[in-house]
Length: 137
Image 1: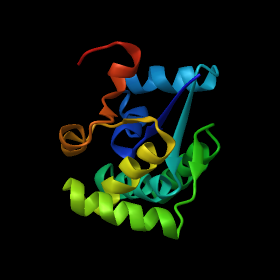
Image 2 (image 1 turned 180 degrees about the horizontal axis):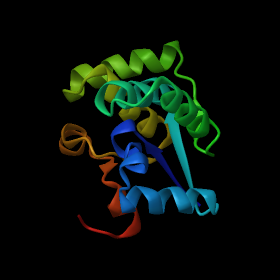
Image 3 (image 1 turned 120 degrees about the vertical axis):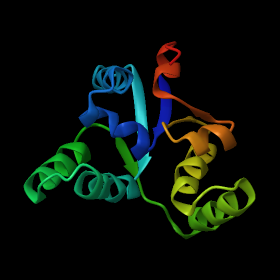
Image 4 (image 1 turned 135 degrees about the horizontal axis):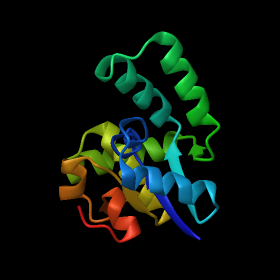
């Protein structure tokens, strides 16, 4: 089974109707792939829905609950990982937020699915959602 770390910039495609992200999600539900993310993604995702998408409190809450029970494996970021995240951010030219995802992907030896242009440019493990399906965008 293929396994990937997914970040909020890619996962937001679920509510935007991004076909590549929806296809990945279906593959996860069907047991063909595993998606992993730091628990922090839930906070970041909620913020994007509230601030960026202007969703209501009820919609944000319901969406986060569904996402938390979606089958994505959410992992805690511990003190050791925070040290690695800080190192990744400073050595790799990323924000600390983005470094969480890159560091987790490196730790697990998985590819990172993202739509973030800076991560795609700077992190050799990063790929766009369609690339996991053989779709070039």
